[in-house]
Image (cartoon, rainbow, N blue to C red):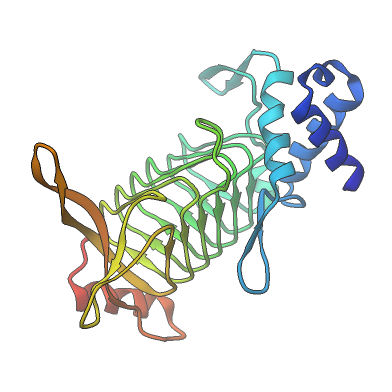
Length: 271
């Protein structure tokens, strides 16, 4: 891996190296290892996450070395640089037409892909449901037993180039039409109600205590979150600006489905 990393880092600084076969082979190997889940753009550590910037760079460099070609999947035709992922049956993945995943995305056994999209460099762990018209952006990390509801948008790192991928940890429930971008991390078993939008500049306000507590970039484990707004002064006057409100916690329970349903009923959260 050290040799691969050195080649990728040098090519990132000097794009003329993309013409060399050794560089091309190294980039393709990195993407192939991502496709198998051996390499990840980010990986969990004991207390947090480690972003593997060099792997992310390898994914980004895959685009300029690839040529446009026609891809066919039954009656469908595509014209793109990145091959489609294959071998779903052997991998134990359920794929409903018209779900699409690109080569270089790892999708684990037991994942269900409804008509949805998973981009290159993404990692989707066991038992996760990617629901209808949900998108998983480039290099995003989706944990075990996550539910991405209909129309959810998980941001990627490619356009524009972001420093860190979005991370959705094990057991999280992301409600319909939520948007999570710019490297935001949603910790284990958190629940986002419908239409929550999270960027790195979005205020996440815990309103469960006597005074509000503001954070940004991370939704704490087992939090139940809904869309909110706060008043901000502008030269033209006072206006409402979107934020996210933590209104409670999922209860500790060995039965995650029961815990989720209780949270949604107790806090009257739309999903």
